[in-house]
Every structure is written in structure tokens, then in C-alpha cells.
Amino acid sequence: MSKPAMIAVGGVVAGVILIPLIGFFPALLVLIGVPVVAYLLLDSGQRRRLRRITRKEIGR
Image 1 (cartoon, helix red, strand yellow):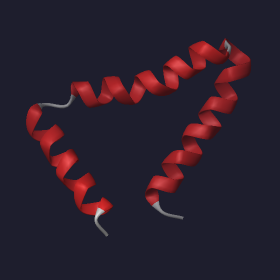
Image 2: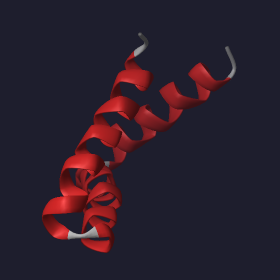
Image 3: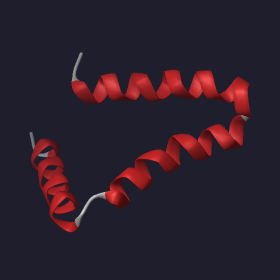
Image 4: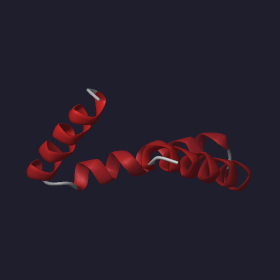
């Protein structure tokens, strides 16, 4: 299984676990908010490198 697929499966599992515990909308906020906050915590050089790597992989 590829790394992006494993990340997607992990996100689904986290969502399934969070929905019964805290409700749908808070779980959705956590699942969307955590990656966004993590991206915003990167400095500009790390963001640039992440965007460049992503573009190269899309072209494959």
C-alpha cells in the first residue's frame, strides 16, 4: 500500500473513532483543522519544498 493510501486510511479510521466520541461536526473540524494547522506551522522554505514535491508526484 502506498504512503498516501495509508494516510487516507488513517484519516478514515480517526474519523470513525472520533464521530461517536465527540459528534460529527467537531470530528470534521479536527480532521480538517489538524493538517491545516500543521501546514501553517511550517516555515516558508518547508512549505515551498512541500509544494514542489507534491507537484512532481502529480506529474508521474
